[in-house]
Each structure stands twice: as structure tokens, then as C-alpha cells.
Length: 335
Image (cartoon, rainbow, N blue to C red; front, side, top):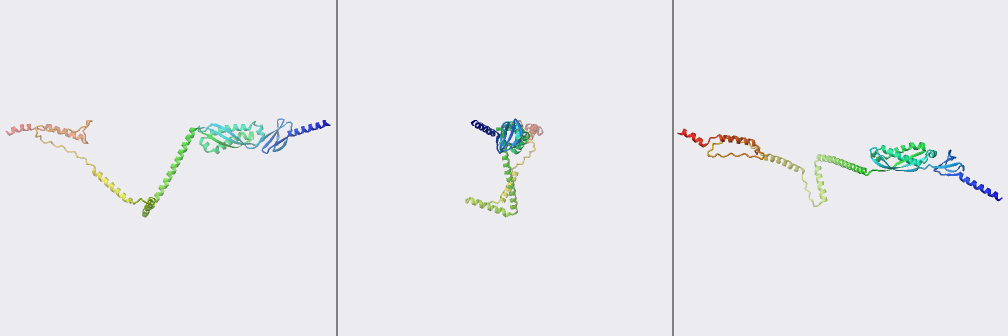
């Protein structure tokens, strides 16, 4: 009797053990794939308590939740030959558990490698300005490039790809900061110039209005006097008409023109050479020698004419008869 009870207890324990090996709990976010002696069964077990054969059956659970995979920083060269480092993040999930288990061994690692190569390829086709300003376009292109090798053959869906950070060289960062500063300065100058242009237009309109109404200028002058006296009570402001200043300006211009006209000396006319009178003295006076510069030229605006006149006078002086010759000529006639 005791042996029978012992055998029954052993069978009960073995049955409980087999039952424990046959039961599998599948969570709501999981799918169960059963392999029987290494062969895939077509039925995919849903969430709940599932029973399999304790001997020969093996269940693999695959999560269908969205997984987040960080891509390590990748160094690449853009289309405009700028070296930079980019890191990104990939969001994906399993849509076909059978393909994810059968067609690829370690799908998270495979997705990571595909993301790295795709990131380098996309950055190599884009320039730096597009990469910095149009992130949405780069992210969409990355998703499109990664979907082709992962969705159909591996049963994975890339839901989103985001570029987290772009590390630029220090020299490029300094150049970009200078460019941004120059752009801001250009905008500031354009805005200031636009403001000056609008103000000049308004002032021109106001001047035209005041020109049509003569009393408006006087009212504006009185308003300015009131404003100045309100701020500084000890200051006395005397308005001076602008027309009087213009009258003085015209008078000064006319007076200055006449004075300049009178102050210009008239050039002296050259004197005509005259025949020298007979020399009464025994020693004739030597003619004044013309002034010479260091370069050998005669000084004065009429140096050449003065020189020629001096030569003519010298020849006539040499040919002129002296007193002795005149006396000797006169004595025979007188006798």
C-alpha cells in the first residue's frame, strides 16, 4: 500500500512538472513563436497563458514595442567638403516576429549598423547649410534609406530617425559666427537706412505742407520756443529769420566777388626800347645787368624780352660817337 502511494505521488509530481514545462505566459506587448524540434510552427501565440509540448517545443518571445537605439557619433564629410561629427537616434519596432527571428540573428545590432552606414551616406550627399537648416528633410531621407533593407527582409519598421547633434570644427564655428555677425550687422544697417528713408519722406511731406501754408512755419517756430523754455526756464531763445541769413549770404558773395576782382593786379605792359641820349660824361654808365637764377635763366616773367633789349642797347651804346670824336669832327669845320 505504501509503495502504491509512493508511485502515485511520483506520477503526480511528474505530471505537475510536465504541466509547468508546457505552460508559457505571453505578455500583451509580446508575440510567441514556437519551434518544434527546430522547425517553425505557423501559428504565432498571442498574449496570455499558452500551452506547448513540454518535450520538443521551444517558444521565443519577441517584443513588439517601439525600441530606441542610439547611433554613436559618426565622422563624415559633407558635399561641400566640410568634416563634421554627427550622432542620431533611431526608433523602430518589430512588425513580423518570424522574420525578425529567422532572417536576422541580432536585429538591434543589425539596425545599429544599418543606421551608421545610412547616416554617413546621407551626410555625404548633403551640404552643410542643408544639414543645419533643413533637419526634417535629412531625417526623412534617413528613414527612407533605412526602411529599404529592414522592413521587407527583416520584419522591422523604422518609425523615426532624428539627428541629435552636429559637432563642427572650431575653425568652422568661428567662420560661421563671423558670418552670422556680418549678416546681423547688414540687417541692422538696412533697417536703419529704411528708417532714414521713411523719415526723409515724412519730412519732405511736412516741408511741402509748410511751404503751402506760410503760417505753419511760424507756428512750428513758436512751438519749438515753448518746448525749449519748458525744459530750461533760464534760457532765452530769440528766433532769427532764415531769410535774413540768406540776404547776408548773398551780400557776402557779391562783396567777395568784387573784392577779388579788384585785388587782381593787371599785368604791366612791356616798355618799348628808346634810343639812348648822347653820353656827356667821359665814362659812360654801365647798363644794369639782368638778374639770373642758379639754373642760368633770367628771373621774371619777361626774362627773355629783357635780355634781348639789353643786347640791343649794348650794341647801340658801342656804336654811339663819343665827345672826343665829336670835337675833332667839329674843329675843322669851325676853322
